[in-house]
Length: 456
Image (cartoon, rainbow, N blue to C red; front, side):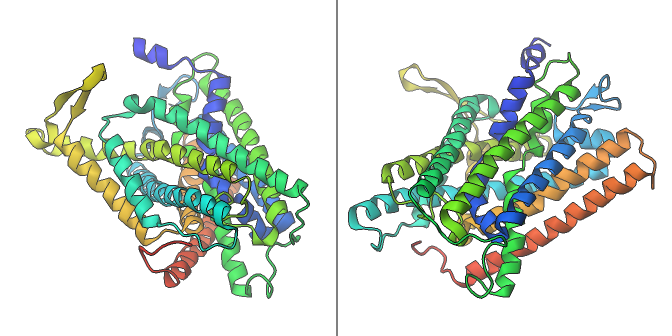
């Protein structure tokens, strides 16, 4: 109980900060490209629409932290527990599948993004030395192997408690590189850059074909959805709040503050990024070399991305590790391989380090598999769009809406029931279109790419 009291000491300020750091991440890097596909009118409107939907559904989810009563009911400590308490075991299993598919996709996406940023540092220095037209290349495959090696080591830490400091560093880094990208965009505009930027985005017949315009529009929806994905951790953030005032009311205010702050930042990055680059905005505005100088600041931005994603990878893969290892222990309770653990004493008084054969084999295999998948499909925008499309509807919209209606006992075919289901259906259609656009982008990228070759 003492531990619970200590953990449940959060406030409106801390919850808002957690949301902001959870939302702002590598998704911000693709927003200028997404706005370029949609244009000055639809682009900002879509950003605002996603933010409103995310805030609204987050408010519904906040009422499901306790059940059956949102104020006095029993606590649900995770998103999955909330689904099971409100919707039953069958929906809980579907939710688990959606969550773990999302987590696996994010870890693959982070491997891709980190490798590209590591390569961008090398290329940035090369361009600075040899000129902007030099043939500077970097091996994504080599960088992915280096990243995988780091993750194999970090993955041997048994749980979240051991990596709390990594999460703090990652949050600081995400804010740092987002701010650097924003500052560079402002500097480029102030320097007199006047690229072509239109009300409808990339121009058919000039920048893209008619079919490419459609597919890219769909894919940009997935990129924006990915930038707003934080529902997975909302219940866990709410669990840090004090019980008085009521957690659901504080969380609703924190969601409004967090999402509105993030949207303002995203709008600045997306709109100013589009103003700086126009219809030729790169998919990742810190690695696509819209910026060459000051090269050291571009390098700092990419170093921040690498450090952030080294930590963020662990945040997203730890739940996968814990789930698989808990299942293995229940399946083979007497296995020394599964349950055995030895403690190594680290030199120089660094403390004890627990080593498990299961962790060593299983977690190493997982990191290797995600690295191989990233090597096979090293495409930043396409992969981010697909992750956003697959996770947005079920985790951000469908389950919160269904849980709220179940808890509030909303009558079938009542006005509330009708418009909430219309909202859910509309978001499903958007997610399917975004997934289609991202899959088409992946297919096209694969057709023009030889795996394990050098990226230019």
